[in-house]
Image (tube, rainbow over all chains, first blue to last red; front, side, top):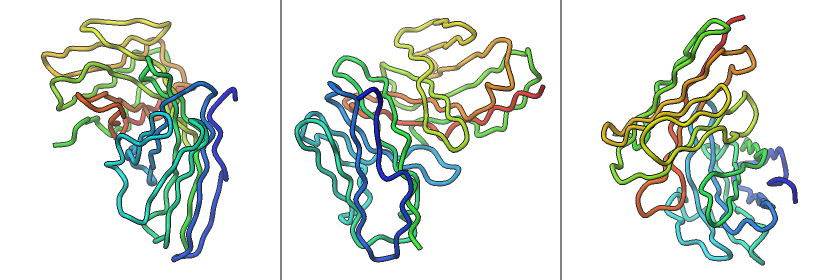
Length: 113
Length: 111
């Protein structure tokens, strides 16, 4: 696609429920990144994919967080048993192999109530 | 010590002035540096990248890099109210593909 697409744009969920966030990167971009941004804070790195593999998942805050990428394209970030502290904007970005500058999607605003 | 540090601001400048945004980083081996602009409620957008010591100009924007001092800055000439946003500094650290972001500096350009 022309840009990085994320869905849903907003998600309100009850504490303890599981949620799935989706990212569709720019066509041909092999690198895909997930970050989260809490209100008024900077970007916190979660995980990086190169193709379908995740060479750097050091930012995942707990084992409740997991992510996968299939077909070298769409990625899904799953948060199990959501907690209120998971509330944030989850941002996905992609880049081509030889360019480290990212293009971000518009994000998913997750609210855990 | 944070890996990438920025003054949170707000930095307030009058319209038409030069805005100077600063960033320091801790990884001496870092090679790639980026400035992103983030409007309130929006996602970050890339405005400048710089890889070598010195200045790089693009329109009203100039990025400056000093690797010896581990310092990168962004100058915005002829600041406009539409430049009011949070500016995020990002660094590619050694051995790591993902960028590390600073917490951003909020810029307010007063009409």
